[in-house]
Length: 127
Image (spheres, one colour):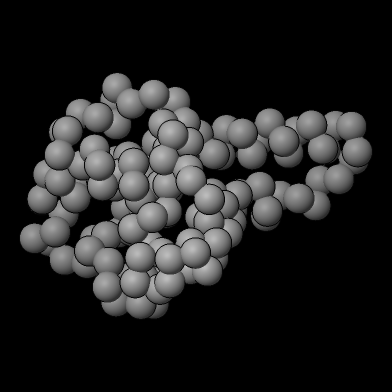
């Protein structure tokens, strides 16, 4: 996890896995809620990615897009982070990513991930 997050994150979600920095972090309800929200975000993006993949595969015969489709959430996350780096600088880029804003704004609502609107992160998307 240290390599993936450069050592500063308490947890990271790589659906279907959530990796915690240590045991004390994993029992924190706020962190669990935050990571559950990321799981739902990643499932939504994966669903869209599979639809795109099937469309491209069926109509264009391009089945080589498999890796891109599986990584679509991370591609979107990284592109948004790059845009926010330019707009806000390194200190504010992470906290202005739409996926993070939704997760942080709703981490204190324990069951938010069960009741959140589909693609709820989109309302936080401001480029």
